[in-house]
Image (cartoon, rainbow, N blue to C red; front, side, top):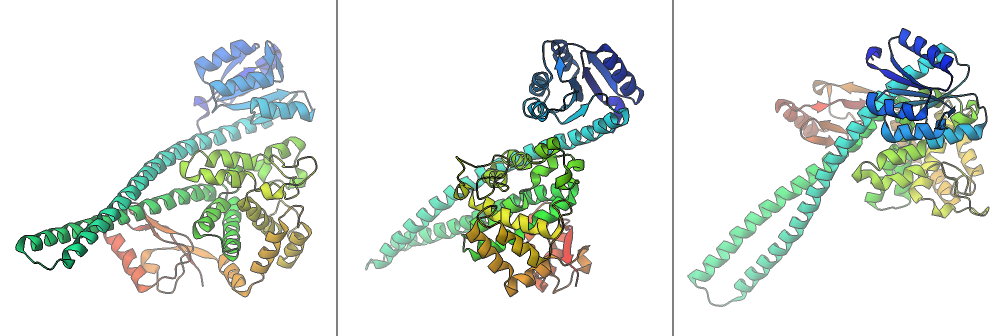
Length: 476
């Protein structure tokens, strides 16, 4: 990132602090504006559009929190840092909630710490802007697909009605005893029309399939963003998605419900992409009170991100509630009402994800405490029945996880994978991730065992100049 192009506004009532900030920040190449007045600071923001805004807790004409809230309304993408002498948690929480600050630092500060904070923030700002652009593009794409899908569905219904009428007319013609040339001509015309409509119906069904495949690609794009941005969150989320699918199948939920739950489970921690990596990398017990407040907002951040994409809005409530406990405690909202738990009010998908995610964290997470054996994790789930988790779902989850078939799936889930070129793919290999092409989209789903017909399809797409992207297969 070229720091010469980055500008910073510093607002503080102490002129000496402003001079010190300006001197240190300009030495490393930032363009710095300063002000000791909140109203003047807002005018600078409107005119200069700085990348970073640094404000103290109390400035003339307004509080630092209220000033930063105004800056958010004017320039939402700017990074907001609060300079404060306050160590009171309520004051810091107020600044987070009202001012939507990204960082806070206590006076007197260390210059190196402030510079590192600014550099990390600018990187996150750049990623956030790119993610919003991607989200907007995906939302527009999905809106088009949804409208096309609805239109095709209406046409299919209309076509079916027309075909039913044609069949009825032909049946009536066949029942007539007299056969004349004009009657035969009418039946021939009807048959030709029926053939034409059947072909149109086939084409429309193919279009519907393509729309479905493009929807799957939208989901794959979000999953890929997680993989690139935070591989730990990505691997955890995909394991949780598998656990949830297995449990949903055992509960005999509808096929579409299982698919939706799998998608929501894989995206359940996408809100962590909005949180500083330093916070995510710390053991939970080592987080400061302020850091813990920020961390506990990740389900809300996830809901906010997902609800921007029309086709995924229904996953928002599931994602937001996956850390709400069955007894009514939990976060980000907590659902306690007069001391009585309201666990059944938590979406079923959220309750399932809570169990699957908790189980996986017990096995593999380096920040949620000491890792347990599968047997130890099962015992921990039992201890959390009716408090943290839905007791009936825990019992069913344990039943599923102890099943021999599930254990084979788990072995497959943990098998090492590698990317392979088309010429390396052989019959018998198992695809570890969905396979798609650039132009034609979705080709085959994860878990597909490669057969001769798949090999031929891969080669055909390669000849057309549209080869599959990143074919990932299990090793061994």
